[in-house]
Image (cartoon, rainbow, N blue to C red; front, side):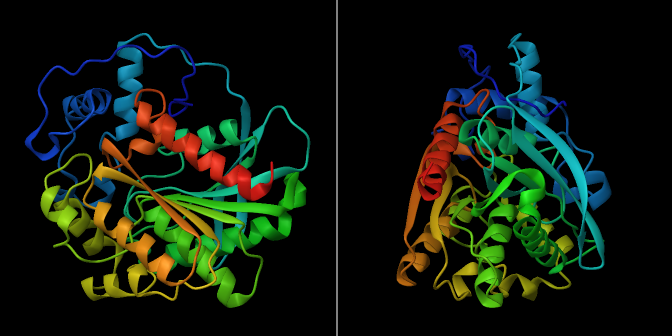
Length: 342
């Protein structure tokens, strides 16, 4: 699969062609190499397109794959098998991809993973590297969930389906050699928002609670004038105009972005599972991730926040190239395995 970008061999010494951009003077060299490659792929600004066109534009994953090819980096043999499965959800079905370690004793712990894309673009293929990396590093099954997107299926369609998928995992975990007593959540960006909501819904419906959640640069507020939105308004691969475009396409009206399911800072966060929030420095969403950590603490949730310097939004799945991604995945896995007792 083209998005299989987990690299374990010695890193190539990657050097950017140009200087640090004005919006990211602290950017790490490897991160800048990815951004330069993404720009060279010639994508159009997302905010100038309709959703169908936007979904066809080059992604950060495409840029990583191009860098790998340019530098003759080898892809190792995958340590996890994967299979796609249609599962029942509200108003139909959705696709999940189940990654299973090739080695290890069953039943395996389970991580339910939600991808990013602003509730409008991307899919489980684009975010394959994150899901596969979590599987390979944790020795856990990873269930990566596809969900409906706007403008075709606007808020709260994704939230409903993601909760349904989690409940399906809890009820059917034995059918794919998972351990019903060891289930955690991970989500990136919009997926971080979805993961937190899945835990909130589980609490409110009194269904099985996840043991841990990792929220990677989650959407957690609707303040486009926050410190990081101002400082990184023109950043890549995520900027302020793109986030405004996501709001336009994902919701019936911009006021829905204030809903506590989107603006998690307004939500009831009590009695949620232990939480790790991973932030990227060069990211319009940096501020809201930090604020969410503070709100969780106020709600007496055991939470930790880790900001990775010199990297942008979407860095988490770039383990092949960006050292900070390798560190972030290792931290996430360490916390999850500790919660699992493995």
